[in-house]
Image 1 (tube, rainbow, N blue to C red):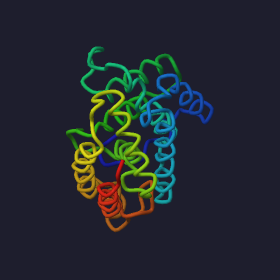
Image 2 (spheres, rainbow, N blue to C red):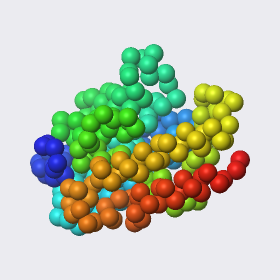
Image 3 (cartoon, helix red, strand yellow):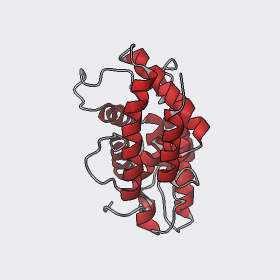
Image 4 (cartoon, rainbow, N blue to C red):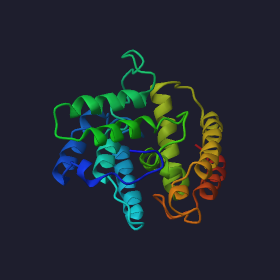
Length: 232
């Protein structure tokens, strides 16, 4: 699949709806329900986001391997609670991709779809060093959609992330410290979204090819201002 293309030849799309449902559901056991943010509900939200974007891209006449994306989304944070470095993986995303690849071994899935799923998961790493391909962008956008989405959901997710950081890392992390760190990431993401955007592959004037029908960068910066005035 060449860089810059959404279309996957239909002959390479092998996943059936039943397979998508089964393979996605089997990811749940790799998530911990006591994690406030990186839990099964987050995986389902990201899967839903990939479907929303895929549906929008179909209106442009594109053939989208949405089933493969949905499965990848279900697995994209699998094993998040495990020590990936001790297992020999540089990032959590690489470990999640490995878990999915191991799970798919021997199953009837095309090599094209397996590679697509693996790369899409790895590309959700915030420090991904290269420009993302279209499918990687779909996954990435779905993963960070809440930053440029409705403010109430964004604030709630921010609180959950803060709670999770305190639970799994630094128990003394204050809300103010968290907000300061999150601010840098949100500002980076807002800039990145304009530079590395799905609309560039479709129509530079189309701002709706995203999970939320909102101008991402403007909404993200507005959410940041709300976050900075929120107390915990």
